[in-house]
Image 1 (cartoon, one colour):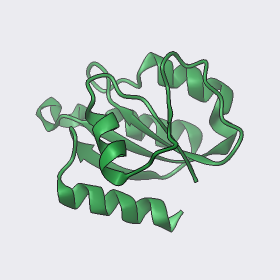
Image 2 (cartoon, rainbow, N blue to C red):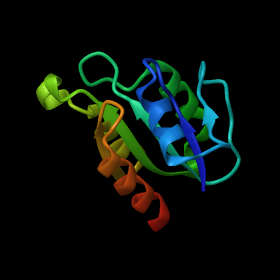
Image 3 (cartoon, rainbow, N blue to C red):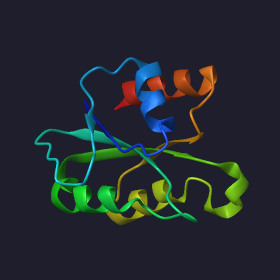
Image 4 (cartoon, rainbow, N blue to C red):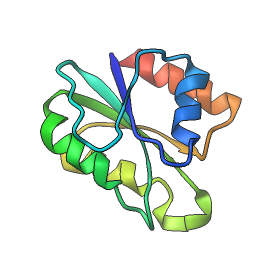
Length: 118
């Protein structure tokens, strides 16, 4: 399963590194493409928004989307990891995991388990 991710502050990129995924595709501006099944890792922008580059990427590539993992900051309350909820609902894919910022060791193991289930 291919992994595609967006990272602005480095938290999501750190998660990708901790999991040990070497061939992940980083979304820089949304113009990237993938022609195989993939899971997307994203951050939550603003107060619960899907990042614009992720929206642009998914507009062109959503047919192969199989799940979403999202990072966020719990201090945003109800908006914590909201981008994952939005993507899950809009593209009818499972929200596999919500992680606080860069994640704990336990989070990393849980994320690995979720990826292996797909």
